[in-house]
Image 1: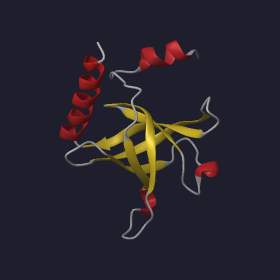
Image 2: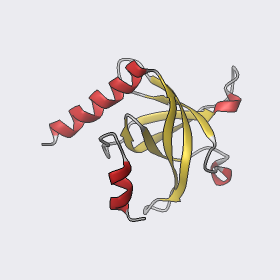
Image 3: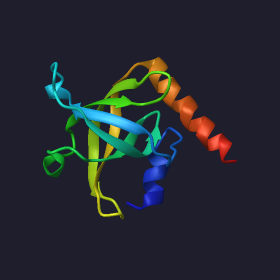
Image 4: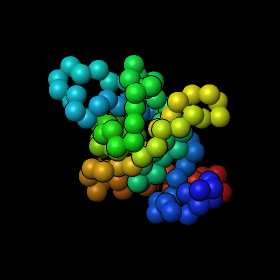
Length: 123
C-alpha cells in the first residue's frame, strides 16, 4: 500500500510536529513500572507514530498494548494504544504506529484541537 493510500484511510487530521510522549507496557502498569520518554513523529486524535526507545524496542510487535501520556499543556493526555505497525524510519530509528484504543473523549478532543491549531498556524 502506498503512503497516500494509508493517509486516505485516516479519519483524523495528523500533524508531523513532535510532542513528548511517555509510554510503557499496558500490562506493566503497576506502581513503579518504568516509563520510556520519546517524541512523536506525528499525532492525531486517532493515534500517533513514535520512536521506540525502551529496552524492549526490538521485541515490539503489532497488537502490543501501551499505556501513553501525551504531553499537552496544561496536563498530559492519558490513553491506551495498540501498535498497528513497527517500522524503520528513514533516519534509521525503530518506530511504531499506534492507534488509540482507549482514550477519554475530552482527551481526544484536546489532541484534535492542538493538532488543528498547529496545522492552522502554518496556513
